[in-house]
Image (tube, rainbow, N blue to C red; front, side, top):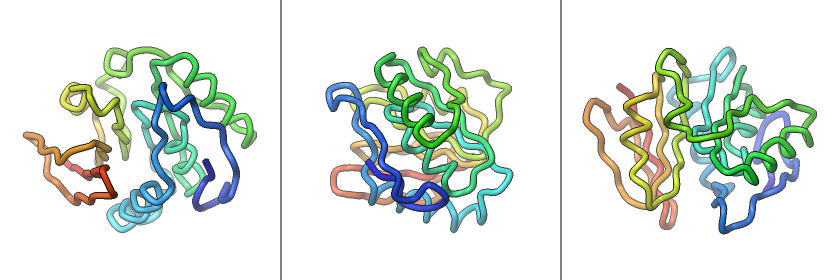
Length: 168
């Protein structure tokens, strides 16, 4: 995996075993952050939560592109090791919480952007959306998703992957 833009553009990162995690493809990451820029403008002084971290690539892309702070939640310990390793490669320290993302998430925490990419076969999207406090939620899924109490800002399909931008 390679960071696609910003301060760390071109830096190679480690990826967890494909049976543990499915890292977001570079063309999807580019599309997500380009769309996000058109919605939010610059990323200065903004916070980003990568709710199901995997390799940590989404949080690192966010930092590379100018987000002030990133927090990562990851359940799998092997993936958490990869996340720490990837942050270290860039001379950074991961703000990483290891454990069940939904149960660890505090309702009083606020983020400008939350990226939600649980295992596709799970039903964790609703549980995550009920607990998060953010301006923009971005969902990566294998099907089109709609949620009560949220407005779809944008939805795009990349092959078999849907990216949905939501706001309250």
